[in-house]
Amino acid sequence: MSETVFTYAAPGLKFGPGASAEIGHDLAALGVRRVLLVTDPGVAATGHPARIAEQLERHGLTVTTYDAARVEPTDASLADAIAFARDAGPLDAVVAVGGGSAIDTAKAVNLLTTNPGELMDYVNPPVGGGRAPSRPLLPLVAVPTTTGTGSESTTICVLDVLAQHVKTGISHPALRPTHAVVDPDLTLTQPPMVTAAAGMDILCHALESYTARWFADFDAKQPEERVPYCGANPIADLWSERAMSLLAGAFRATVRDGSDRGAREQMALAATFAGLGFGNAGVHVPHACAYPIAGRVRDFRPADYPGDEPIVPHGMAVSLTAPAAFRFTFAAAPERHLRAARLLDPGCSGEGPETLPDVLVDLMRDVGLPRGLAEVGYAEADVPDLVEGTLKQQRLLATAPREVTAEDLAGIVGASLENW
Image 1: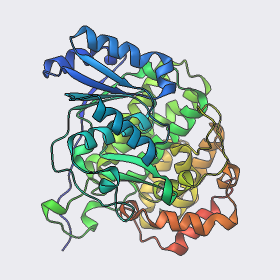
Image 2: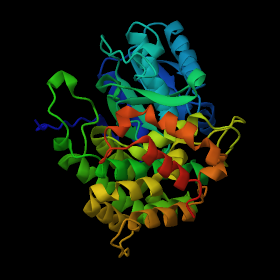
Image 3: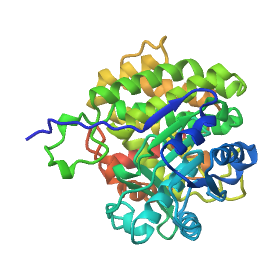
């Protein structure tokens, strides 16, 4: 029997220049008094978290700041943040200021300061125990400073499990932020490569949710069996289509001129819309491939990212296999792939499986992303290892519009060593 029900959920949303100046008012109205503010060193250096903390205090709130969130969180970095929060004493709310890394760190802190057990108890199987929260979480206000991750809208906390060299996540509806405060002015300090990588994350969120397996093509589920990613559906489609239209006009302009406030606002809207779409429909092959690509990096250090440790930023990792992945999924829904290509490039006239990959390659090249996996340090000999890591992401692969085998993944990863 086929599924007949799809679900939709979203945080409360406040959007617009200056929105971040109203968080103290909003939390005080909820009776909140003790707040943990979570951010990372790079964002802390911009002064945004300190300004937000100051206006929270002006509304009578006591603020403790954790400013050591790691870009691309690991189980170790999350454990450090959780220990800090537990030592900080009773809390009434958590505020995350930063990109997806800070917001995901705040989600983990919120979960493990309100529920028993340790981090790995809650990580998705087969990597972790897959435990569901048993107690309510605190209000979480997510304030993104990058335009891309959509973490302010989603139920997912992404992390690297260091001992297993794999990127995975914790996924449960309780992790979704209570409020998303999207202030485009906070993204003006986002440098070009961060803008490019995060922008590709927006794009893949929209594309993957738009081309995901249709919700009614899944087997029927009981209410307690339904997961946050329910497959493509009519409501998620609206958000994804609008996100792609906004990207078509703003993405290249924002990377070229980060001071363009109009383009920054359009990118912030696109990120929000894409998050509202994929946070319910789900993502599939490019995101599944991205986890081992980011988790097994050896020595790649991209421009504009802080620190000396090698990383492949999440949005970059997602983008590198996207052309090959959408070439593979084309046969499952040709009309959707072609519609997406025309939304991203209104002048596009192709009709075949190369149409969307060609649009993606042109965009990736224009915003300065690496040519493929080879440029971030992988070779043909790494393909089996990357496939093995991707196969662990069954939560994501289940949402793909067609079945994905190890052989299929080897073809996608191998073709992505060089995209042009």
